[in-house]
Amino acid sequence: MKKSIYGLTKDQLTEFLLEQGQKKYRADQLWDWLYKKRVTNFSEMKNINKECLQILEDHFVIQTLEQSVKQESEDGTIKFLFKMQDGNLIETVLMSFNYGLSVCVTTQVGCNIGCSFCASGLLKKNRDLNGGEIVEQIMKVQQHLDERGDGERVSNIVVMGIGEPFDNYDNLMNFLRVVNDPKGLAIGARHITVSTSGIVPKMYKFADEDMRINLALSLHAPNDELRTKVMKINRAYPIAKLMEAVDYYTEKTNRRITIEYILLKDVNDHVEEAQQLAKLLHKRRHLAYVNLIPYNPVDEHGQYQRSEKNAILAFYDTLMKKGIHCGVRHEQGTDIDAACGQLRSKQIKKTKAV
Image 1: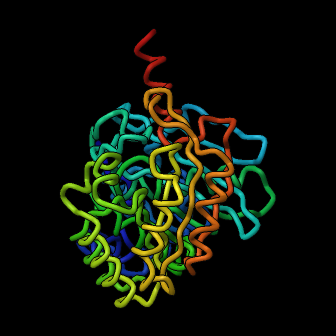
Image 2: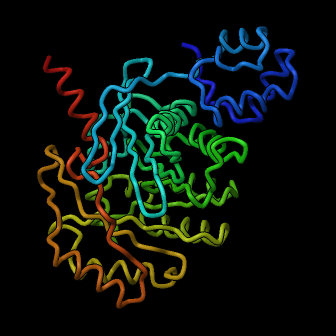
């Protein structure tokens, strides 16, 4: 299969064109057609000569994703299920906030991290997405917005979809460089967040990239015993190692880190765990923000339930009284397979049933 042209950074595209005997300025023209005019076919690039167009046709494609399902929530959230060239399915979500439109992208087909509460890991990793397939998720959503004709644009990106982004590091970085490019989609680093379950070596590497992109750490438990029960990755990277990596990231970037904490009824939502979390983050409280997340139940993970409202409030109050900045995530799309991976999992089951 031909590669997606979206997988090339501006520098990589320029290098390719020069190797093919084309002028350097062609990269600027192509970049404009791809990310400003957002064409879906090379033939639409009117100021590109036939020789260059043929080279592009021979080596690349623009569209590799086909919309399979689109679910729209009453709150405006839209979940897309895309089929890729090899038949695999991925999810992408568009969310509307008061600060703009945010897209949650997927980086892998399935996930091998194996968090015991997560719908994304119900199906093991089939493969990594290449950079172009990740970028195209943004382009498909932006083209959907263009068709609505109200001038809206994607302003924020969260890399929190199916898969572990740091397990697909090189393709992740290519994606980030493309969408962050000021002559392309121009989505600022401060408007992009990458979430990791805690692959410690890649956390250090990410800090050294010096891109100023936000980092979120999926912690979900304040002690090793509990975290290992819900997240097996903790065996490889226990909390002490995670916190050392967090300290390195905040010192290197001077950026605040988000600590993600899914509240599971009678598992990790007691005041005792809140106190432990506050103690863990105390010396880091000025550069850490805790995002408390109500759990979206998944049929296959029936042992977990959503925390009661009073438990969530007690957890929140405990952290705030201890000086830990936190908030409870505003839920969106709860009427359309809200948990990441649910729509894909259900669609695959339907296909197998047929």
